Length: 474
Ligand code: PMT
Image (cartoon, rainbow, N blue to C red; front, side, top):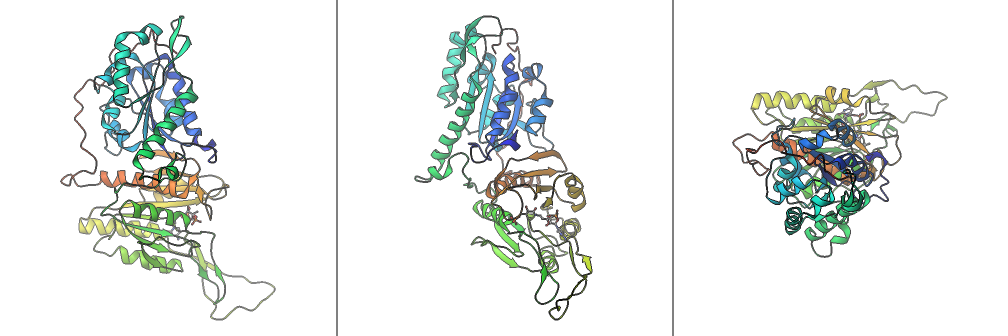
């Protein structure tokens, strides 16, 4: 499972991998393949041909991957995007394992009759293919010609092994050993990264290393990010504060700037430098942060496209602030009062402002600092009125306050929670902004050019004809 990834050893940390499963008896091995990829730190989503679902249930792979499984080339996702097109654009590698003789033939001829061939046609990311079938089928000239054609496309073929087949015979057709397939995925991403990197930069960009966006998918967007902790005075000397360093919010700001956004960074108390290029608004208290947010959400409508509240805002403050330093006494009782909920208030101002102005509603993202369990996160998502809520268990080693890493689960009103492995805060930022980009595209007015290439209308049959069930090799 993704949560078991050892970040020191993982080679696919933060990488987005699609696993395509076709109709072979070896489909059952895809469960273990998903787990192995997650153990390497990958965020895995699964595409299946209809025939594959005869061998293995979607529920198993949905539960493991924590993403809906795409089985229908005609299906739309909850956000309105076409499943195979979003897979084609959201992942960094596609691995088809097992790949049947039928699928190899369809792919070699560009027949997009299932989600996997459609995604492979629509993408420019590396594709790794691990065939599995009966030995006679694999050695047939038709299959060999199809495999050769896929190699011409630049696909990596992980040759099947020799051994006992589901047909009861022995021969070359067994799905390659899973670690071999995982190695091929790692190598395919490494090759893609180093060919995309400017010369000399490849070593910094190996799989598992912090990724840095080269995209400009936030160009023209104004993103407001809060970071750090607010402080509430007790007297002129003392205050109530929290352990936030600002690293999480500042990592998001850096990634947003790299992706072309204009960034307003509302800072509380932080222990790291903010990035050059961001417009910085310094605040001390929840009241000052509230004023900064209100200035950005006037009654005429919000001035930003995205708000991400990573700041740890004080929930309570002293009801009165002593004008002079309090003397040392045996006991001191301080009466606290709640601070306003800045995020919920801003979400409401945004709702009212956009309704009045007709402006597009910005994407709102909250964070949730929890200890021990994330059980309260769904209710926070609702109560704050946000699109996404990034929950972290701040009691977990390596997560939360002051650390360079974080393990988060992303909640949304329209999808099941997505648990990410332990990642650097920069990697969390990148994966979070990927999801924000998708949502921004989904709220584009129909008259504006889409940010994604338009999907072809899927006019081809939705089902995979004739799966090779009886003779498929395991
Ligand atoms: O800064 P780092 O050291 O890198 O640590 C990162 C972090 C742990 C601070 C960050 O990952 C995080 O969890 N930030 C949210 C902290 C928090 O205040 O959580 P909360 O569950 O109490 O609040 C939920 C949301 O409401 C947050 O988006 C918060 O900004 C917001 N809030 C909270 C209280 C309040 N009065 N007004 C708010 O707007």
